[in-house]
Image (tube, rainbow, N blue to C red; front, side, top):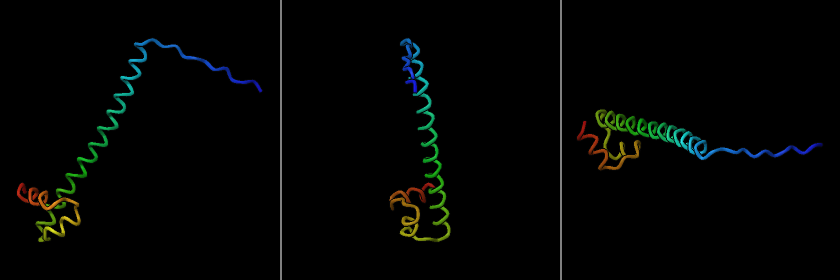
Length: 80
């Protein structure tokens, strides 16, 4: 069986720089999407904490269900 020939790709510095830019943009997009998801989840948890408080749940229960600290819950309720 014939051994495959290895080829070396020769590129200019400018081409290499463009590749790095493209890779950086793609990584930035992925990070931005993940950050957006986390932000959306945070806002949803805040809404749920407000709804729980409006339904009459005590702060300790809201803390245990949302994962927010007592200070965070108090701030959320203050902002209403």
